[in-house]
Length: 485
Image (cartoon, rainbow, N blue to C red; front, side):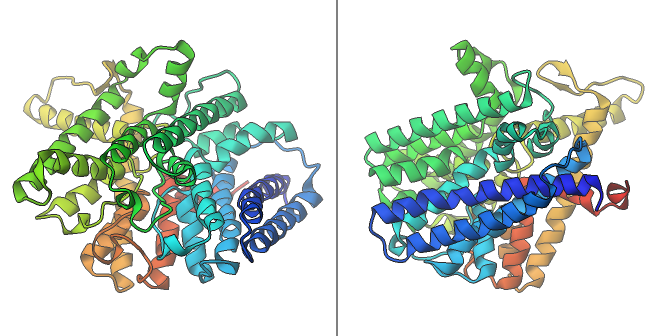
């Protein structure tokens, strides 16, 4: 085995050991709450996965090799695969006693913050299992890889290549602090602070402490798992829904902006970001259209309830959080289709959301408009601008290429889901939900994948990883050039 692959094995061993630690908090909580059976499940899963990681790391612990960018793509992809595999263990050996196929789907959905589920009867599950699901989303929100970037330097493993491969959006090379590990720690500090603030808000507004902490973990991470089958409808509280809307939006904003705003103690930085302004315009516009449509159709009582319900569902989907209001798939006309489809747009670059990202969508729309103007004035020179500054042709081409490949993967997934037996509407909703990491789909996949069949569940698992790593990071592994020394 070459030094390159031995170094990759070393890093994966460390990351699997880190992933195994996620079983300890719910294990200790299960002991404290006096649950029967579940403590052994969590501690046994911890021991099994920690030993796998340790024995991967042990024979190559002294390897010294400088990682290249392409190594980062392989490590990041394998990290999500292995983390999902070991995180599935508690779902198999304890409540809800899923098949390994369903357990991997559930764990992958948590870590990729997709929010889709194959579990029904959440209210009957032990609290430790519910906490474990929320914890997976909390860790996946900022990315297990970025967490590793903050820790790996202690083991003399450079993390820059991992960070570049994991970061989302067209501005992935921007650093907030001089050292990449410091950047990762800064992002985690902001992320953790927002989660604490969200939990406190939920608690003050009427949630119990356990539910408040659990929903804060899945709201700021834009994950969408709930501790109740009915989700936020369990409380029937407009105040809780508006709090969730605020923190879902905060999770959908570039965390670099949050960091700068916190460091400067000023909100002015938010007003200078063109992507954020576009994100707010899109979200407010669609929420108003959906809210007015629900009001005119008489789906809810009064305009206020219609607007609140519409805003909650629109924000939940465009931030790819995935909380659902019961009955949203029965809304009149094309509203369910519109709401599910906006998950393709996603939120801002550098946030916890999935989807294409607003910056890319705005850029490709402006590029299309430039082409139209070019047809009218062939000799004129038109520029694509973002935030008042010219975007280089290489970035425009890169974004256009990304969206083309993303849409190709999307079409393949729609066909694939349809081939597994899902009707066309359900297949379309499932493809959006998986590739955009948005959670709810349409038809039979609107609320759960429990009845989708093993083939659709495996395809969905692949789709979630593809979407979380923005397709290129995975597809580059399929090229012969990648594997040449």
